[in-house]
Image (cartoon, rainbow, N blue to C red; front, side, top):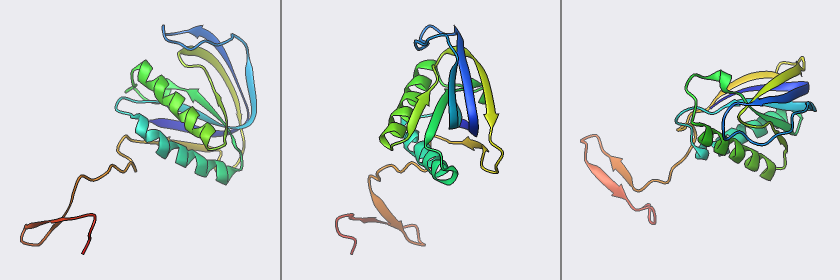
Length: 165
């Protein structure tokens, strides 16, 4: 997943034309959001829903550093040439929105599957423009099925997680 994160004075977008059959419903009008963190978000092949927690934790850090709790998720396929299938990309964007709302952020999500006109004014400070890359195996802990110790001779000793002694 790739995200171009911009702290904006304002962002305007206008849905112009549906590009795919599964495009979300949207009213063809100009939407304007002021003082927000714009997240131009590209979901790539191999991205998984379990990544969303790590992504939201990162966004929360930015929210705290910048001091703005309003985020705009904007589907933006132009950050990669390895795109996830549309249904998967939409599911991940919806999961990001859900988690951000659960964390108390004010969330706006631009419609998926549309050609949109986009106009922005980026704030002039050092944290206003950031490019972020997240990979499916990044900082995601899976439950271990067993623990072993390997000695210098290559002998394995299985450790019981109930009793470490």
